[in-house]
Image (tube, rainbow, N blue to C red):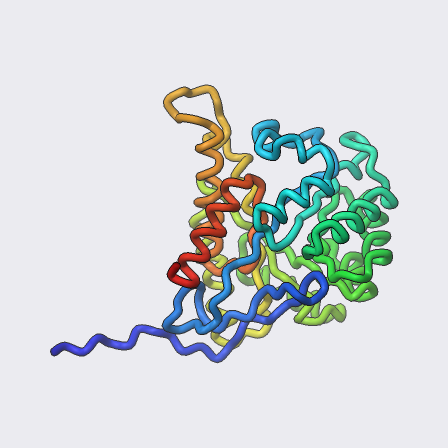
Length: 309
């Protein structure tokens, strides 16, 4: 009888465990590639972070209709995500931009507190993308929300010191962002470490391109980061977060111009789900999701891949 050769890899590295929320949610900890039970004894599925906005000014109506009116209140929206089964809430404060909303640092802080009390889930905080408005808001949030470990998004190569200072002072975690490059991801983690951010407080975002906009390359970057970390590169052993909501920016996913493309709601749900499945198989530890149906699909598939049930 022909012997079947051993195909499992032997790694000497482990993905760093990062405690979120009240310490009851852990991202990371893998000792092998995802869902490879013969080489990775850690059987955990990626965390699902449900997306919540403080304003619906530029939020897609197609997505809003999926939440039965509960998207009008960020706290109620977060509650719905918990009911769906999300492990985390991603709050985007687009309303900090005065052209899109009227969210103040005080109002943003209150929203975060109320979501934390209502759900008990870890919370990821994103601003509007304008430092002039983001820094005061994230500073106030990180200073006044101390009973849960927040994930502050994001630190990049050009601006990481302010958000790192917030994370250190508030004992929160930080997202280290890099643009589709393994070396840039490593450099970002080195910069954070040199500034004083502990390894157990960093989660990497190597940028997840959606299906139709470079997903294959993102898959390759994620996979190379994960393998390098497992092989012992400590600067690439941070957990990976992938934002799959960019799927909603793909024209073919949301277009209603061509009837032959089929039902748009069904199409964009699968588009986001396929992006998320590629992300989790390539190494993602946290997936940020917009559509509730797509998130539910990922929970089911990841459980099947993890437990075989």
